[in-house]
Length: 172
Ligand SMILES: [Zn+2]
Ligand SMILES: [Zn+2]
Image 1 (tube, rainbow, N blue to C red):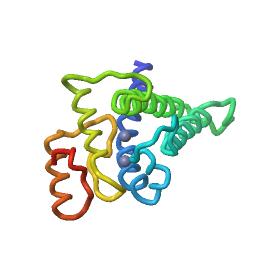
Image 2 (image 1 turned 90 degrees about the horizontal axis):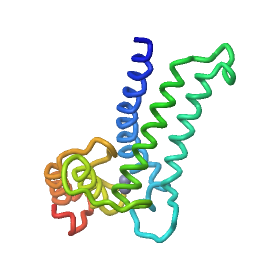
Image 3 (image 1 turned 180 degrees about the vertical axis):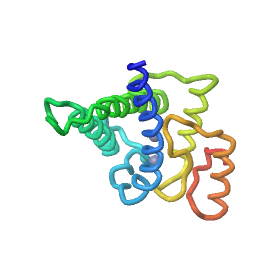
């Protein structure tokens, strides 16, 4: 039984991090944090993007939790569950880099999924890249994709309402 609580904390943290990523992508990265996110939405030949700094922020969050969880670092203030939270944040970071950097943007492997969850995830994130600039947009989560048909309908609505500039290729 003792092992179930840490596992539950790790899984809950991964789920919570998808919400954190969604909210910060929508309200920070497409808001006052656009300066770091912008180059992810523009074509370039660079190996790295300023946007990768958000990954560094995530790593710092994870490391801080490992420090808080460790008596070696935090002494009497150590809070053991923080270790499992740190592991969950790390897990989310690994999933993010596999599905977003890898599967969708093909930064270090090339695989085009034909069906199921992975295909839907790629479609949903491609639709995130269908808008130009920071205004409007859809699909701000990275791991939990919404129905692409619904996302296309929302893009169409945003274009017609003048809330976003949508690329023709989006099929919206
Ligand atoms: Zn974005
Ligand atoms: Zn992307």
